[in-house]
Length: 374
Ligand code: ZN
Image 1 (cartoon, rainbow, N blue to C red):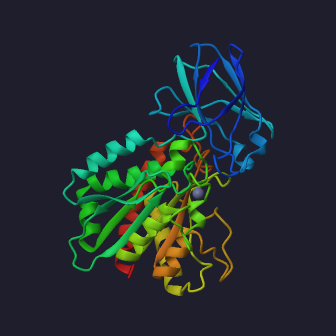
Image 2: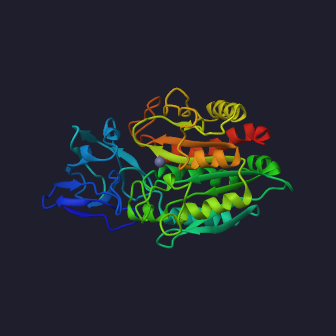
């Protein structure tokens, strides 16, 4: 069997690939850190013949619980993705699939590829309200781009959405595409938001990790979402640059977009553990959640992370840092890797399309709270 991971976001170790229709594989850790979860690889297959791919160390991965009720993402063109039959016995995960093309790519989640991001930004750049700038460089020198939708107000609110600090959480890239795409295409929502606010979107916070097939960290092996208190030029220039841009412009609303391995629901986490959390912010979080329930059918408030005790918030995390620094509505949004357990779809699971729709719909919830943000 010919198996390769020599492509953007590709990562796997082939332990034994000599069989004609079966192979033994291992998930590799991030290059400079011990997180082990992401994989992506392509197989040159015989159409119509079942192959068996045994990933033998799935049970030893960082979020092994995430492989329960999980089916692998598969694609023939790395654009359209579906789910392929996957078994898991607590140690090995076995993909048994009959491909319908000569080449098939399997991945932990549908990668959001550079080519797609470039096309999106090229389209956005033609919009008269848009400005695109490089506001930071990664450890390996890749640009972090900010898409700004300018405001007509002299004293605008500052809305920020960032995505994919954790590179393996590529549903966040699709979410950001939904946000930027709708702002470019829907003059009504853009006009409403920019009459009072400017909107900043950083669609890819961790380009090195995304290119290298990392799950959690950047090229230096650092978790960007633990770097917000003391970002360093040598290890976390991504956070240093974006944080500086926020300190420069100000923040009245912040959403940090992620994927969650083990909680199969869409939810937000607030900043209730922050030292200076107030009743005003708590009320805003509730208003935003109510508006999200109206805006998108996948969003829910029953399941999520346990709440932080007062004062116990981890200020190294983006949403807590920003909420504390700017006294604003500041949240982390999570989407599932596997599926929305309230609304399962065996064919595609929690898909790129659902992620993008959620991003687009989130703008309605932001519009609903806009007048109360400051
Ligand atoms: Zn994350």
